[in-house]
Length: 220
Image (cartoon, rainbow, N blue to C red; front, side):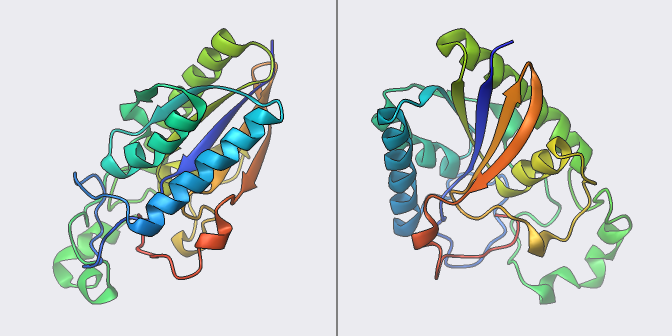
């Protein structure tokens, strides 16, 4: 079977002055820095295409911040944005709360910590991986259909689903310390397939120059 690559692109910085853990809440837009990040990623992809990369398929989570991140790439590559509910942010009990420790340690939340390995405060890691891996496989097949051997697809998603998918693809345990995720804003977690199987996972940060000073809201 042909080789293909599926790039999991985390969205750009969100305008969130109140520090809300926004999860799946609607209408959280990119900040000015986030828009710059999205444009930088679009330029990165366009430069790769100019050098021979065969990027043929673009998919986005339905959430506003992901759609806005995908838009410059859509324009630069002349690709339609296909909306995919399976790559949406993880469900989270703390959605809508201020992302600070004083809120999280309130007694009313204690029962949510009963099983951090699952985790019990939101959608399980395994459920995230199941839906993400299904979407990745469909994108791989669609890319090959459209572009043949060496085709590439871009999926714009969110930190936790992307990182859980990477852990799964690398055969590592899904439980992890959220503070140590290697998945910065507009980073690329690229899953390379050969003969239908994961050959390797590559990680890059094309917009690294814009990361200093960017928001670090947990679970964003």
